[in-house]
Image (tube, rainbow, N blue to C red):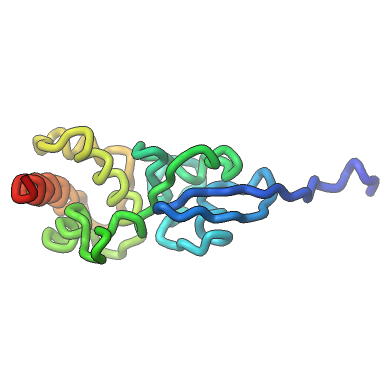
Length: 172
C-alpha cells in the first residue's frame, strides 16, 4: 500500500451550536452531523435508522427547518443553529407542547422514530399552527414508524397545535 492509497485521516476543528450551546470538536471532514451529535457532542436523542435520509429518525432542526442529519456533514453545520430533540424541552424543564401531546395521545411505542417525529412536528406547527388532519398527515409524511400505525401520531400533531395555541393565548 502506498501513501496515496491510505485514507485521509486529517481532522479539522468544528464549532457546532446545538440547543443554544457551542461545542468545539475536532473531527474528520467527512463526519456526518448525526454522528457528530451522538458521538462527539454526546446528544444521543438523534437516532440513526436508514442512513440514507429516507426514514426520518435522524431529523433535527437546522435554523428551525427539519433536516436529515445523516445527509449533512458536520463541517457544513457550523453557521447554523441546531436543535435536537433534547432542545425541544422548555427552559423550565417542562415538556414542550409537542412532547406533551405525544405523551398524552400515546404517539409513540418503541420510541426509535420519536425524536424525528418530535422535531418535524415542532417545525410543522410553527409553520402551520392550526393543521387539519390531512395537513397533519402531510406534515409527518417523511417520517417512518413501524409500530404505531400513525393514528396516534396524527392525533399528537393536532393536540400539539391545540396545546401550543392555548399556551400562547394564556401568555397574552
